[in-house]
Amino acid sequence: MSDIDIRIEGRAGRITLNRPKALNAMTYDMCRAIEAAIDTWRDDDAVSLVLFDATGDKAFCAGGDIAELYATGTKGDFAYGQTFWRDEYRLNAKIFEYPKPVVSLMQGFTMGGGVGLGCHGSHRVVGETSQIAMPECGIGLVPDVGGSLMLALAPGRLGEYLGTTGTRMGPADAIYAGFADTYVTQDRWGELTRALVETGDTDCIAKAATPAPDGTLQGLQTQIDAYFCGETLTDVINTLTHRTSDFADGALKSLKRAAPLSAACTIEIVHRLRISTLTIRKALEMEYRFTHRAIEHGDFLEGIRAQIIDKDRNPAWRYADGAVPLIAVSRMLLPLGPDTLTF
Image 1 (cartoon, rainbow, N blue to C red):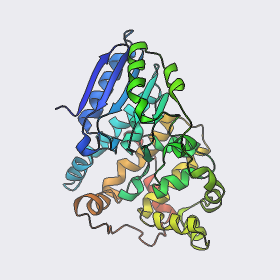
Image 2: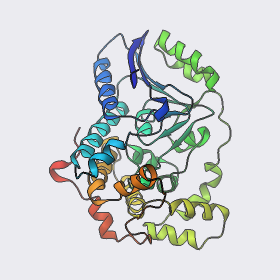
Image 3: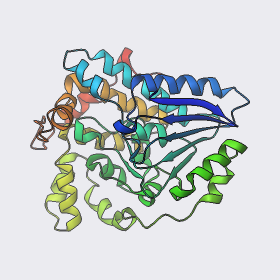
């Protein structure tokens, strides 16, 4: 059985992720196949829209398949990871900039690389099981696949909070933070899919929509803005340490699970993107500065070892005390010169 099912049905170009036992994690081959398909459909008048969905109940796509990245990286092969991320980011930009409607139906976990597939289209649908997050700091990366764009555009200081803590968003919170557009109960997704395929018209999405169950982020916005307004990771940690509230305690606990270098760079990336002319390409280029260096100079291999390989959940992070020097952040985010991500 193929890891991905790509076909034309009716008026829709359909892409179904088909690795349910692996939570539909995206491999490099899947990435290349998706890019080839949407390139072909761009100028195909028979295709009115592109529809992403996935098999299984647990996940739309829980991220990229990082096993090969770890295997090659531990052998000193940094080029494989750099190539994977470069090509994945180019795909993310193509989805964001696609001239036809791109619809995604995101059940269960949508994280990391799944955000890059599902959250850059024109019509992003969530249901009652949807859980969207950018948990990359927990494995020594930064929110990537264009996720930094949405973090920079999120209300107030939500970007810093979501990016450094990896907090999972249910459907209402995902819509509030700008990672999704529409809530449709999942018992109607079959009917919605048939309408999209038959008509090639996205008007049926709004007709199927209902209000999402209440979320939590909007009610926490004032606290998030107060606690995550610092210029650096050290500022945020100090603020949380000296505040007494259940939210502050929980946020600090989550933040301490992140790789400090990753969290510090995430805050810096979000800040830089907010004060520039923000585009998806600018966000991806900034992310690639970090990921290009992450295997050799960051905590990525140690994060994968602790979370996935040995599963001891006890990573030996650089700057484990949370005091990340500004020069360390600057080095990870320096322009890459001839290795700069291009499109």
